Length: 291
Image (cartoon, rainbow, N blue to C red; front, side):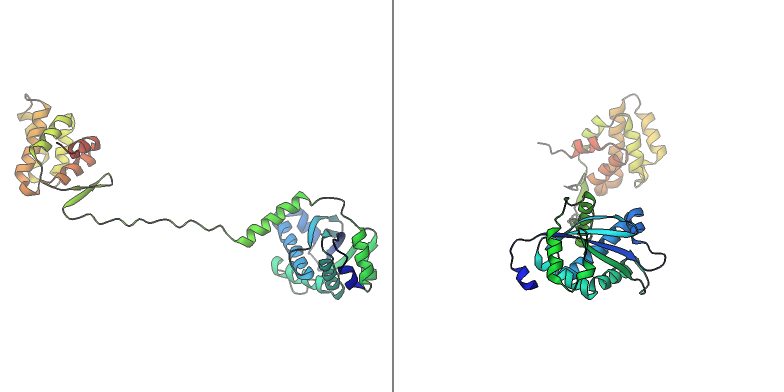
């Protein structure tokens, strides 16, 4: 008789399953009402139970989970008679209660003794009283059409379940660009590579024109690796060429550096000293190609 029902074509119906914990100290209704995390876990228990009993994710949807004190009411719309029939068979055999208990024990960390009392209704009909008459139960469910659309809270809980099922969003893998090693005859400045070379007369002139009063600071920065430019030497240069002005003082300081260091008086050392003194604009000017 039930097989003939399956062939009737498009079919919908509604049933309400009432749940109550039989384990002391565990109140399913309170968990669903009072705790955000509890609400999600109880909903997940119900969803997993329906998946087990109805044979998958399709053919039904939860419309509402509501307060039916002391029970927790779960209103389910069936959109496929086969799914409804599988659910009724699972419910009749006790598999629905068993599934509810198992999922609740696992997700709520409850003892194995935890059990659930259930009652199934379609409109005013208590289906527990006629579970041996599958066709009649299907008829009662079919005649009990849903009076509402799915509750917004259920939409939210379904969305959270899907997010959890997908797992954490994959984090983008950082792209690590391998830095090409700087050749031994080059140096890096402002993420650009320049050929290192000995300082020229043009470099000295550009430096002297642009450094102004900061020439002493640059001299002291160079003096960290040049014995000819100690603090006293720089002060002597300032005194000796005071009348000639800042250009000449800077010119004489850098010329002394070149004379003392010889072939080691490299462009990279001057650029590094200018960086240390926050004079990157002057360094860029000296590094500009000249015609």
